Picture (tube, rainbow, N blue to C red):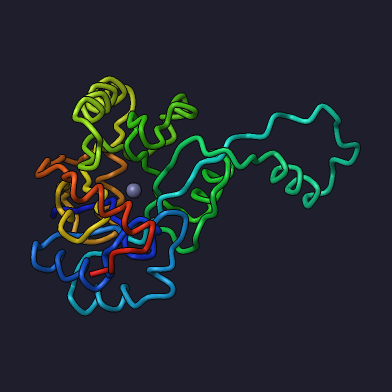
Length: 252
Ligand SMILES: [Zn+2]
């Protein structure tokens, strides 16, 4: 089955697609989808997308694209109390700065994850039994994964084709990197659209031999995916995300 595993709905500040439009497009194209809005899962919990997907028999994977924040420079003063769990968890939170150093995507989440450090996000993902993916790993005009690239073994999948990459060299770099690491760990390669408008859905796809969650997880864990490069997002689509931010274009 074909999947578009990185898409945005109107619940992302820079996207225009109504969830129902997205599901209808997937139905028409016969593909599965993950809607991975920026730092929120409102589309799943405030909207009716789960119900619509179920009715239309579209394979929908609850996901989110989450900002990774830098660790705060370590405070030299050491806390004298160390045996309280609360104090430890407060200390952990106080180590989070507000500087964004990249993004990750999580699949099969049942609870929204707020922007946090890579370690804290990873903890949450593990607790929820979700899968961790690396979006646009070398896309420097957007956030790339430079700051946590030495953690690549912790990822289950990685985008090697993102249809919104500003130039094709960025995807080529991802492909090269993936080719090398795949020899050590079978991290699944993904092709995605990163659609912010309905027309972009399917621009990049991933073929996975799965018709249910269990099969999907198994295939991802084994690195059994195939990428499909359809189209690149055009200038007009990039422009529309700017209009969406300013709220001067309506959702569709
Ligand atoms: Zn995105």
